[in-house]
Length: 202
Length: 391
Image 1 (cartoon, chains in turn orange, blue):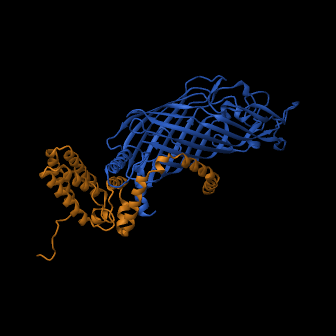
Image 2 (tube, chains in turn blue, cyan; image 1 turned 30 degrees about the vertical axis):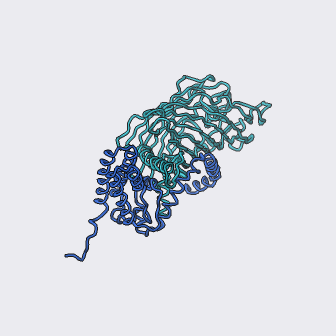
Image 3 (tube, chains in turn purple, cyan; image 1 turned 90 degrees about the horizontal axis):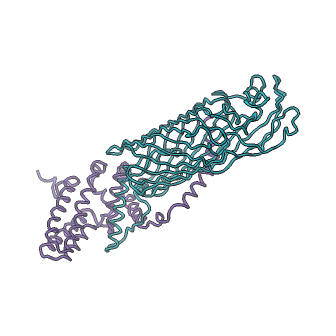
């Protein structure tokens, strides 16, 4: 009885709902539909998730909206998305940029320091994004909650370092180098095991 | 839903009006990327301070956290009534109401029982609204209802007796009223927010202005009375109190709402009292005080899809006073046939079809009704909301 009534009502008002939706859609500000940055970001995400194996997709699906938004905020900062580079290769590039930053500071080269710092901050995103390289055991809200703060510590301070160098303030740039290192080490401690070990050693 | 869609949907939560470019390398491009990333972080923080989307038919249960942020949109409600109630019992017009000796009493004139009855009715309300935050504690709200009411009526012969066959229908007709209802405006005060925003209390303080007409009239068929030369013919008469577009008085709408959330669950409750601030309107009457209590729970299946369940109880006092122009043997003209109790249950769905743009629908059905006197029985209602947030 109640079901029939509900069905009848749904039929009766479906047209009304359609009209309301269409009115709503026409009133959506054009700024949203024209959000090209967002559209690009969506495409990148779509391609990354398409590359993931089902077990990883399942883990990603279970992440909270907050965590997903944090990952988005990190991804939004990067314009260089690779379809070939692995995370290890990207980290080696980052290390190279880090060393160039140090070299720039040591040689009082503002250009070298700032360029390498900005390149580090906008490091390449590895193929498939960051998540596939972190291990399934780390794809959860608890572990990924620290990602944003480590990212701010490394990339945020790299930008500050670049700005300090451009102002000729190498003392401040040198101090920021330590904070960047702290961010790197913290992130490695959570997401990376001791590198280069061999299971063939007793 | 595919996993990739889920992640994209989550992202959609983060974005609102400002356009940012996810662009290539370079100073301007970098600034755009930073702005986009900051915007996502800001929205992530904002999301913590807002409830899971409340059911469609609810107002005054949340406010945005910062000055200048607001939500606006349109709410559409349709309420349907069918059949007659005496208290909580369904009654048939001929057997229980128009009988001269045992039927529903007519307060006016020589006709002892009611002779003009509604069979069914429908009320449509289109309600544009805005909720604008002016500081970290107060938001201003305003809404202007556009109302259309339709009632299918039947007039009976006034020659009532114990023989029901004599209760001849004089004719069926439809009455309508349409126009602006009582405009409402006021403030929401954020009385309490826990540090994690999981528990929040809002105080509602709203005024209802008497902008709705209380003198709506339409063509009606007069009941058949002995010696009457207009019996059975149409004539334009003022409509009953329930068919008017407003209450004719300034009313205070005061109450409090609690909302909370935990993981994918949202929940809350609201008490709202509508109290006329005048003894009577210019035509000599006012609606009774109304008290509403509602509680809801919602579950977020996806970041963009939330379902809800809600219970609502209402108690309204009888109508006070009377409009002398309305002295007629009609059900809607009797002040004793207004107010009462009703308990309703509703299920709803909220869908975020675009960033910060929500469309929601709620189906409402009565669980029990105990109305004062004789009234139309509420069948169902539906509420559709379009909400558009600006951060």
